[in-house]
Image 1 (cartoon, rainbow, N blue to C red):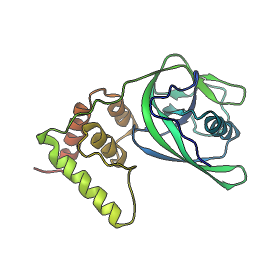
Image 2 (tube, one colour; image 1 turned 30 degrees about the vertical axis):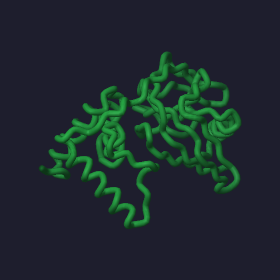
Image 3 (cartoon, rainbow, N blue to C red; image 1 turned 30 degrees about the horizontal axis):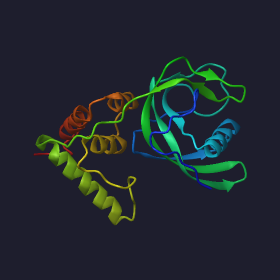
Image 4 (cartoon, one colour; image 1 turned 120 degrees about the vertical axis):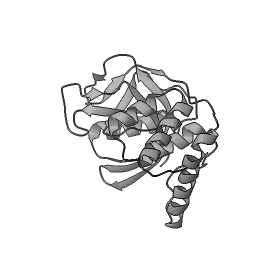
Length: 213
């Protein structure tokens, strides 16, 4: 069973949210194990309407379980488009999604009767296509080498196509790999300039001696 939404399709309003203790980046692959009734309904609705849902990072609050108190969420998230759904067993779904466009919440999220959080959002523009500058080419090369090593282990770390000539793509993929605290990842994801994002990642890698030269 599959479902997807073409790039540029406007999401429903208010947008249903799937709050998680992670930062989803545009272009990322996200695997979810869905078992709560509210999120099973969300997946069903998104497949039927061919619409995305919103993944937003939790600052405080539980990912699962009932909650009548509004959890503390970040103000910027990323649309998740469903690519594939498998029924692992009755009442449990394995869902593969891809991160696409960023959004900013406009109001405080509201909880529906089924426990699902929804909120009106404004879509944010995608990263402009910018080539990595000469100063960060060692960081680009290091990512290419990391991809090659993972492929040798029969693992595809990222969704194709690989765009090593795109500063935003390179920065986002490093942000997925690195053990950066969630607040720092959130700040990086929110940056509108992909060249600055990659420069900050490059500085982190050099500080940690992952990249030299």
